[in-house]
Length: 73
Image (cartoon, rainbow, N blue to C red; front, side, top):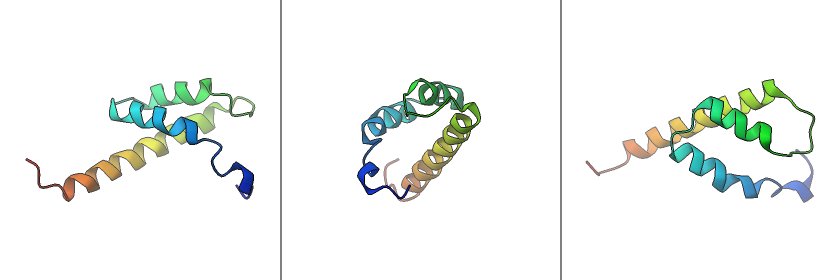
């Protein structure tokens, strides 16, 4: 946050996390993925759990919104 040089630092993870979400990854699976990544931080299990929960919450809301606008049956 607040470091312009780091704006795209995690872009490489977006595709993998997106794929995990589309495949129905559980919160525990996302926690495991986040914990395995070398983000240059000390291990922080509570942060990994919060990030996983918030990511799934966002994804679920986003998919619901997309479904509301869909005309496919």
